Each structure stands twice: as structure tokens, then as C-alpha cells.
Image: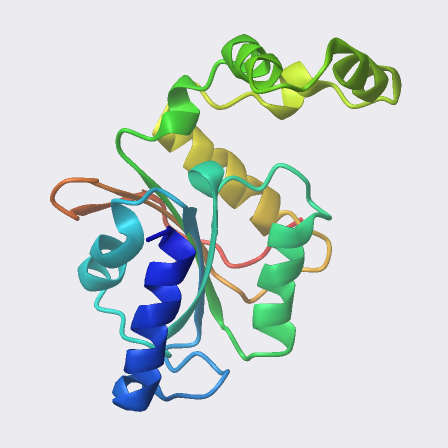
Length: 191
């Protein structure tokens, strides 16, 4: 049985048994927070438990490395929607120990892309169109640097209200212990 078949079979029973009732909430985050975190599989359940979050408490935006690489990209837009439309009043950037983005090697990834069937012609076309793959596929040198960089992008965004605290945290991927990397409580205005 394929993954999609397994998922659909489970979902049918989930709905029939009304298991969804335990998760009913509305679109507004009860704790009025928005979180940008990594898509790492270790954080799926660990992060909410470590932060005492239940369904409906927070807007959680996930991507590779909890990184905002483009100030006007989809992650920042999602944060602004959470703030302006969904009443989030605080932002948390949560990186984690052992993050793959800290060791991401763009040359290796480009090699993997080629190995999986993407031609040199396609890669050359992208490069000649101004997309610098080696830069775009680059990670960061360490997890704290990644968190600090993303906090800076958010705090200095021209559309972020000056009264929104932006915190940077690092979660231990094994224990769930949280460390404050940047305290947004110390300064809530941006330039």
C-alpha cells in the first residue's frame, strides 16, 4: 500500500470516528504568537510540547532552517498576515541544534539535483536568468547565526509594526530545552 493510500484510509476512519473534535478551534492564535521554525521532523511534536502549545495557540510557519531569505517572500508575508489579519502580537524565530542548513553544501546539492535528472541546460538557464543557485542553496555557518540573521530581517522589516517583539530561540533537538538567542522583549522597535 502506498503512503497516499495509507493516509487516505486513516483519514476516512479519523473523520468517521470524529477524532477531529479534539482539535476544533478558530483561525486566530489563542496565545497571539507567530512562530517561524524549521521543517525538521524532530520538531513536529517536540516544539509544541517544549513551548506548551496546543492546537489553536500559535501560527507556525515552517521551512528549511527557520530562515527568511527574502524579506518580501512567502515566509515574511505569512508573518505579516499573522500580525495584521490574525491578531498575532509576538514573533518567535526558533532554530534547532543539529540543523541540516548549518552544513548545507550548495555544490553537493547541485550535484544531487543533476543526479536526479535536472540537466545542465536547465541549471545554466537559471544562472543566466539571474538566479544564483550557489547562493540560494547556501545554509548558515551555525544555528545561532541563522536565528540571529532571521530575527534581524524580521525586526528591520519596513512593514513590521514597531511594538511587535521578535524573539530568537534555539531548541535542543533531543531534549526540547529552549535557549534565548535574541530577546525581543529588550527592544520592540525597528529602524
